[in-house]
Image (cartoon, rainbow, N blue to C red; front, side, top):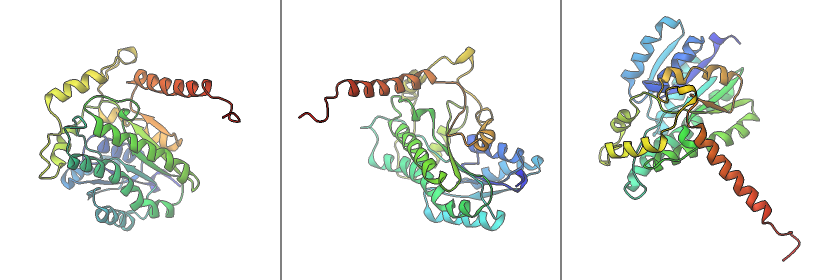
Amino acid sequence: MTTRSRVAVVTGAGSGLGAALAGEFARSGCGVALADIDLANAEKVTEGLATTGARTRAYRVDVGSTESLEALAAAVAADFGACHVLCANVGVQQFGTIDSLREEDWRWIYDVNVHGSVGTVRAFLPLLRASEGQRSVLFTASTSAVYPARRLVAYTSTKYAILGIAETLRLELGEEGIGVSVMLPGPMATTHLQSSAAAKPDGLDTPVFVAEQIAVVSEDTAEDTADGADAMISPEYAARNVVADLAANEPYIVSHFVHAGRARTRFAEILDAFERAKTSETPRNEP
């Protein structure tokens, strides 16, 4: 199967990382279905990809709605006839401590980040299974999925969930020849905070972020990167290896070398806990 006969579906494709992913797939020759809750933005990105020569089309989708996701899958099946790469990329941000966020805030961020990602895969699984050739699912998590930061308890917990979902589905869907990868982007220069605030439903008046919270998060996530590299990158740079890594069925895709020290510390502490349990065990045949 040639690259030009392949089809990629990207949610959250109207801006930021989603738009960058759509661009990478289009330049690789794939047909691309760009889906976003803001159809106008998705259409602008689609227009910008005209020079690639790839077949592209914009769709509106609300990943919090099962009906909307099923309608998107049906439309892609009718328009493209296949889905070889599915990018469950939609996500929103919410700063705050565990006791400052209301139940409604928690439900919102989980409905979008976790249930929306799961719903995206559920809606497209029949089309993925019916498509021929290499097939892949890409989840967008975050480096927040491998280390914590204050004021990000809601967001971080959703990204931990995405990581677990992706790792489990890699085992299950791998039996069907469908690869599953998870992307762990570090800090990117996007409008994610602003778009999250705009997407928050009416009636949920807890601010998505305030200056004091940003200062705390910045303190917890500050880290020098290799060779003095900039910790803040563009979405286009973050997406640069995605097509190749999916082709190689890599389980994890990291945007750039940042926060590796924090991840290394966390995993070392977990392994140390296993070793402590091992050395403190008594023989199992003793009371």
